[in-house]
Figure 1 (cartoon, rainbow, N blue to C red):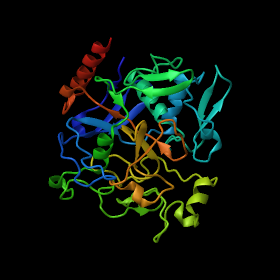
Figure 2 (cartoon, rainbow, N blue to C red; figure 1 turned 45 degrees about the horizontal axis):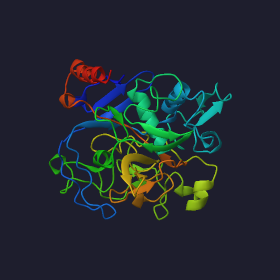
Figure 3 (cartoon, rainbow, N blue to C red; figure 1 turned 90 degrees about the horizontal axis):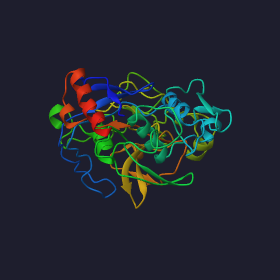
Figure 4 (tube, one colour; figure 1 turned 45 degrees about the vertical axis):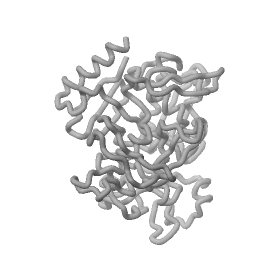
Length: 350
């Protein structure tokens, strides 16, 4: 069973829903764009995507992830919940009860902050849950372990993840999909001459590190150790290490930098939390993009990529999702037409 489109792709903003959780997405057009001529960690040619797709307007946030946990993790077989979500100042989710009857709730004030302490495997399971229509039940093939991806396990340990299914709707973005949404803007539409910005705020200038605001189109949540040091954690004169390990939450609610979006309309692709992407780098490692609240501006740049073991979890790692419509849906202007495209996909999967 597949999730349903509930919006209009041509309008740019595409709210997508499948059950209790609604994922706000933005459409990414300009099909077949050329790659960025700037090398990324000596890897050329990133950012070209030949098809239309949509991507999360925001990072997945705590209240969305709590719905997921309450649906499938009363017995948390595959560790979708990390106890640091409760104990760490950046974590935003509490758990009550015992295995078999766990329940989950959001810490007060953390509802719209990005979920952290999520592995790549957790992110994939969330995408599968969306793909399967947000079912309730044990973690298995019909809920979290199959759908857009198939997860392979040994006991309670995840050993691998399959490639994206050819008819997948809800996915973790590839590096190209994530990169294009963050940095691409055609020169003919006001972008730079090479069609790619250095930062995901439609700018080649270093963003301002300052608290959330609705006035500065080039600002983000990151650590700036040099003048002007006016960010939400810079101003407390903390070193990188004390900032990271202190008991202060420096995360910001998604979209808080309300005029600092990318060309396609995404928020926080620079700063706040690192975001998993689907691309395999350095053997079994998965990509991370965008920088975070505790790292410097260099990590926000298009030229910077990192990778990590897919099981890694931390207080600066989160994710966003993407959606891949049927080819016939790209550019659709009627809700009914989009719904029909998704229905065809659902019917094929039965």
